[in-house]
Image (cartoon, rainbow, N blue to C red; front, side, top):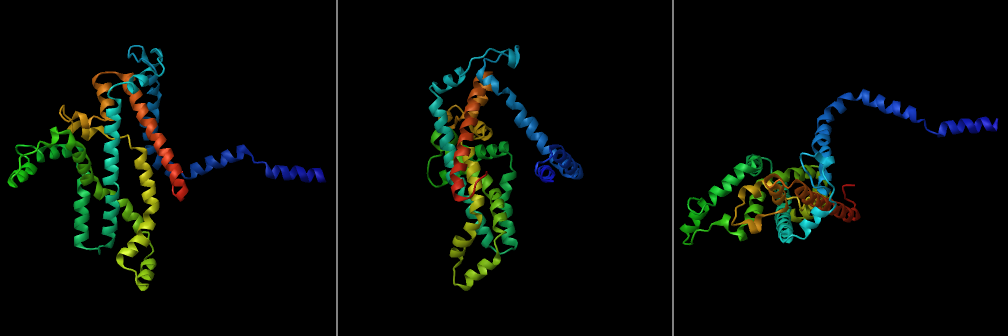
Length: 320
């Protein structure tokens, strides 16, 4: 009797893998609409993000298109060594880091401040109008944005230089002076993205319990103190997550707008890793070398993402 009881107990404790698999498939069939809904996003990342990772191996080979990826000779870390020992390595790294940190320092706090300001404005025509005006630049394409910058800053016909001349100063050729490039890039990005960035913070602020504000008003708290002690703590987790994501792409400065605004005179301040990869890979056809540089960029971003996330875990807010 005791052996039978132990056998029955063991049968109840030990899971049946086949039964669990059937349960999973049954649930998937019951919720097939949800899997169909997520399928396009899943296929997008699988095809365009994970699939191309197969080609990363050419960073360690001397890729010859006629021989293919497998047939090309293996060279190990030669391309990485070439990049690290090149005279332009530190210039590219400095330009990339300085633009990213400049953009982070200026562009990251502004959507938070704007969202807190919008949250304090009563719903009405003024609030809707200001929100529309600040959101609108987000929908301008990069090419149009670069065209606007070039037109406005033209030393002969640009409205900015007309104003400068009206005030009695000499016109400034902003796009040919390296000292101006980073500021123009960052401020144009702030103008284009700040309004759109407030949407996430406004969504987080909408979850704040109104009773907290009512209790604070009864206790005599001013509007500034309520923002400081109620609203900001409510959006702190969102701020932390977005800061981690921004730090994870600190070397991932997009090359589109930089490439459109770049010229031979401002190259000293505008040449970043992404534009160098584009020029080396697509213009000069150095496929293996450009892949190695791009892989270095991605690895550094991944390390920064993991490091900042581990630091953020101490505050209780992290990606994982």
